[in-house]
Image (cartoon, rainbow, N blue to C red; front, top):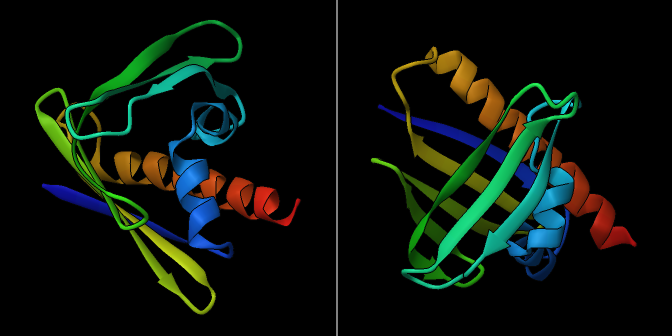
Length: 137
């Protein structure tokens, strides 16, 4: 089953793309809630290139690596990647009010669909807020 989340980002596509794909920026926005954070990130933004983000609870109680391989890159338009036996696609669609970012990903079986959708949507919302803030500064 595929799950879709999306957010509109009121910023130029060049900023949106850079902030979505730069490790230093990823560490600022990649969390589903305030009690989690990303402690390190790496990006090799090319087809066949690897990415990884270390996500940890701020209290140190748990953490995990979200990692995979890019399978398709269309600059400022689309990123496709695989992570484990799952895949995801990120689409960037420019329009008059900024950029619509849509993420479609394979659901996993150990958590309810709505929980997965909610977590990925929260991360994308954090991205949108951060990107809009950074584009204004």
